[in-house]
Length: 94
Image (cartoon, rainbow, N blue to C red; front, side):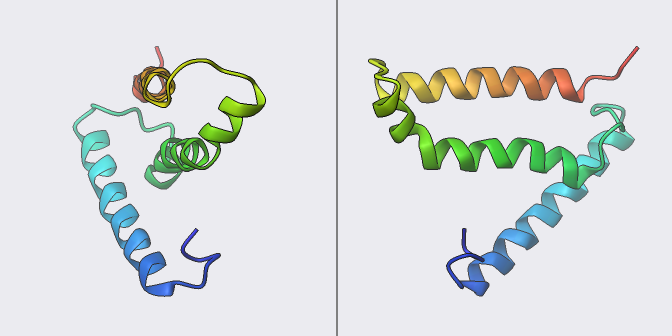
């Protein structure tokens, strides 16, 4: 969003944070804690992308789908299921 809004200083900070997180994913892969099927940047994109999407569209989804849950309950559902997917995705394939 920062890039789209022309806020390059924030976009640069986001890129630096993502690079640091990618290095940590590499470390976890080297320790055998995260499967190496994904490059660290792709792995992070598969996590960060849905979070950005959810934060932007949760309220419109709630309204258009007539969801009665509170925003907090919807967030808990989203984070719980996303966390489960990330755990599955990071486990080694047998």
